[in-house]
Length: 339
Ligand code: UD1
Image 1 (cartoon, rainbow, N blue to C red):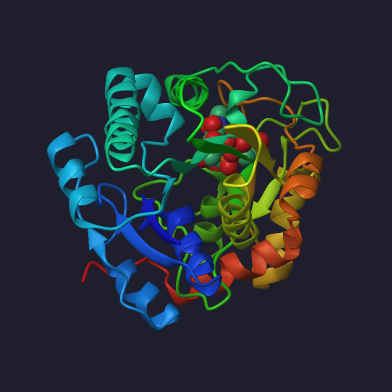
Image 2 (spheres, helix red, strand yellow):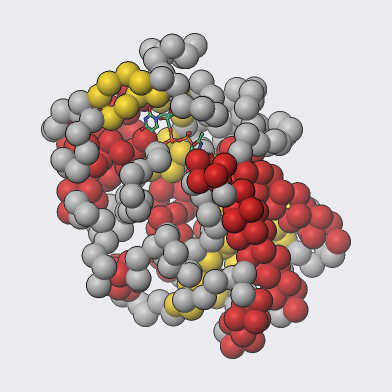
């Protein structure tokens, strides 16, 4: 298939581009580079040995999106593009709703006009809300605790309605747990701008000396050691899950499918710190800080549905995830170059 990857220059998108090419698909990237460096594209081309066509446009621009579909032959879309910082979404709700929803509307309309009705959407376990049952199964009710999370809930609803409206659509929403790690080459990885919001990039920046110490947000949760427990999944396993979903969704009987992409294993913040110390051979200084507003004690997937329907499962351990994050971070201490 010739697959349009929106947000293909971003963290998960870039790893998925590599997996798609390895699986024999052709790829077209659309990215506005608002949270990605153009230099990632050269690295993708070097790693895949292929030119990667890139459209540097904002999908909320309906004319440009229409133009893209009018000029590229596209068979399916994987839609990653969107704003994704929880704290920022609380401060700028309108920007989040507008960007994430408008880009999806623009994309869906252009797809429909051009008879492209196979879509894999980048959703999140955040749709299980504030007090989920564990392990999380796809049938749990959805809700959110912040505007970013609500955009995922709302887009899933929109996709389900669109899928139900016309049997030619085949749509998958993939609910990611906590993606971490980097490509085995160490040339592609997560490159957050500013102070990282998420645990693994923060730990990696402490290890490489960019930050002094980590704050552990709470040690009084009802978990194995009191710190937050999450289902960390290697980004390369996650990328493989997208290829499996794309290869499967077209032959599904129902127009809309939802799959958790996680390992099913919970790992605590202190366990991540220990694993990263083993991988990097460096100490990770930390202090215990207050709980972060909006955090839940524990989150982990029941990945059984994806395992069964997609013939996919996560294979990499927390040690693999830390080793690959460390290779990327130590090879690229300041992330991607500007040019
Ligand atoms: C966060 C978002 C989630 C989003 C996901 C992927 C929140 C509340 N949730 O998930 O909606 O889909 O990122 O981008 O932001 N931690 C520390 N110190 C740090 C950073 C994190 O102790 O400096 C802890 C957290 O309290 C948590 C764990 O590490 O227990 C993982 O945090 P993080 O990587 O931010 O992911 P989530 O909060 O699970």
